[in-house]
Length: 161
Length: 161
DNA sequence: TTTTGCAATGTTATACTATAACAATCTGGG
DNA sequence: CCCAGATTGTTATAGTATAACATTGCAAAA
Ligand SMILES: [Zn+2]
Ligand SMILES: [Zn+2]
Ligand SMILES: [Zn+2]
Ligand SMILES: [Zn+2]
Image (cartoon, rainbow over all chains, first blue to last red; front, side):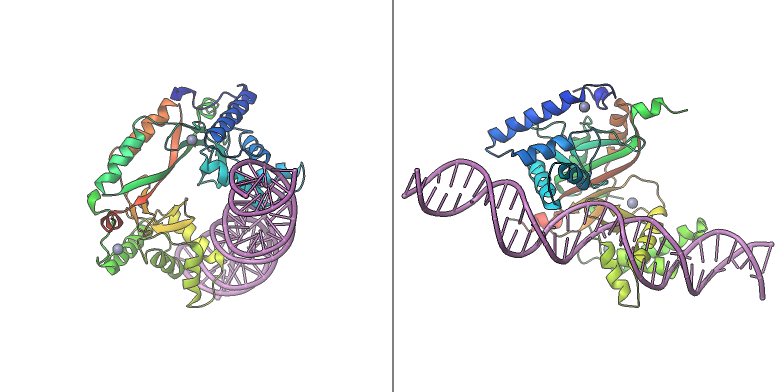
């Protein structure tokens, strides 16, 4: 997965992204004997609607367009999807995004554009190793890391003076 | 600053930590012609009360022991202190912690123990460089990064089976 | 097939985190 | 002193997330 393709072009076929994510989810849940119910599938679909982090209440609003729904519905689905490694929470934004590497064990690393809100999940070479080695020097044993980088994406940089 | 001293011993002289932080704050505000008011000073003191992240409403409760106070009081003080580089927000915990490197330009990096809640602000060798170089490969220009590592601290690891 | 028990969802209420808006007060420079 | 801007007070409300318990759905066991 070449890093230079981390950020999607605005004209890419996003339907394809969504389809692929849903297929991947079906597969993972089947293998792990977990139920990807219609509700959960729909939430995953909504989270994947864009390559941008989406708030839980934004998902809720969409759900409500097709019937009643309350916050616990969304949060339960998001929790399930996170546990299945299908969705990540972006802590610095209180928002959620579909995992680009579902099924592949990885530490989550995100580049987030503060201009257009586009997000790319990346795997920066040697970053996890450097982090783990550095933590070990402190005698610390890492279990889960939050790495969220805010800045300007290539698309927005191109449009700049 | 040796990384192996990142986590404080439970018997260290923490009054000294607090005094040093306050002196540092006075100095920084003086130089930058900003006012470290009694309110702001008190909030900084409360944030420094432990080497653990503290919630805004926990600070508020302490303030209320010495008179009336409302949420905006705390959030304003925290915002000021963050802008002055005296306090960091821990995004994954919605909590705040005193900066260990006030006055020294740095990217914030935290090791957080999920057992005892102790937190160490660290500067992992080459981590920022690795991150910036990796982002550059994506054509991304980083501005601010959130790096929070959850795991077990040396003290808690020692007490384990 | 019926039973049964757990998983999932519905529903209501509430906790927790943070900010908007405007009034009152304080502070330092002219 | 007087003013203008900064700071704080105060009330209300927005935004994020979970508790608690009722109901429904689903599949394995009998
Ligand atoms: Zn796409
Ligand atoms: Zn991922
Ligand atoms: Zn200390
Ligand atoms: Zn710091």
